[in-house]
Length: 248
Image 1 (tube, helix red, strand yellow):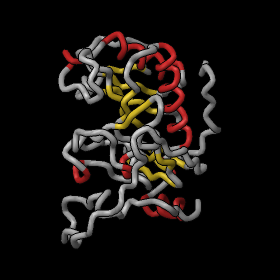
Image 2 (cartoon, helix red, strand yellow; image 1 turned 30 degrees about the horizontal axis):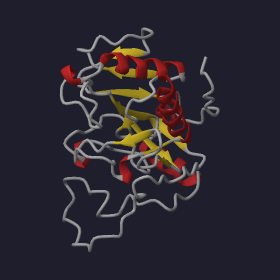
Image 3 (cartoon, rainbow, N blue to C red; image 1 turned 180 degrees about the vertical axis):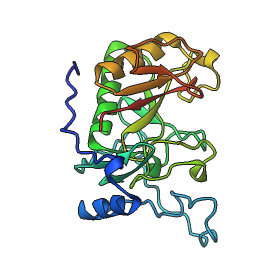
Image 4 (cartoon, rainbow, N blue to C red; image 1 turned 90 degrees about the horizontal axis):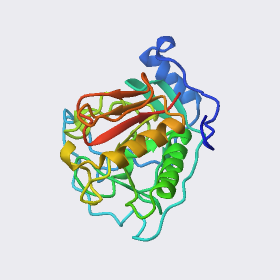
C-alpha cells in the first residue's frame, strides 16, 4: 500500500537489452534535453582525468532561491534507462534546493543546499521525496526538515569519485536518492557518526519510505533499523544516511 503516492507506469529499459551505443540511441530517440546546466563549469566539475581544466569563469549570479522562497518543481516526463549502476536519465526533473518541509545537503562541500547538478531524478523519485517529507513533518511536528542528499546528474551516467571523493556506484538513472538521518543534537547537517543519529526518527524515515513504495532502502549496519527483509537492507557506509531506490 502506498498511502497516497502513485508512481507512473514503469518506463525503464533494462540494461540487458542495451549496449552502450543503444543507451545513447535510446536517449536520443526520447527527445532533446534542454534547460539543464550539466556543463556549467561553476556547477558541474569535469571528471578528474579531463585533459585540461576549464578556463576561469567569472562568478555567476545566484541560481538558487533566496531563503524562504522555493522554486516550483518542473516535472518533465522523465525516463530511467538501464539500471542504477549503469544507466542514463532522460529529461531529468530537478529537486529544488529547498522546500517548506525539506532541505538539501552537499556531501562533498558539506553544506546546504546541494549543488543543482547533483539533484536530478525521475518525476516519480522527486514526487516520492516530497511526499515523504510532507508525511514526516505531519508525524513528527516540530522536528527539522528532512535532509536530502544526492540524486543523479542531469542526464544520469557516471557519478563516481570523479565528481567528489564520496563517489556513488549507483545513482546513474534517476531512481536513487540519499536521505540523511536526523541528528540527536538537532543540527540540520549530515551526522558524522552513528552515535549522532536519532534512531527513533531514523526509523520513522525508513518506515515512511517503505510505506511509500520504495523498492530498496539501504541503512547503516550499526543502527539496528528494521523493515521488511529484502527491502530494508543493512549496508556498509550508510551509518549517516539511508539510500532509497524506487521501482523503475
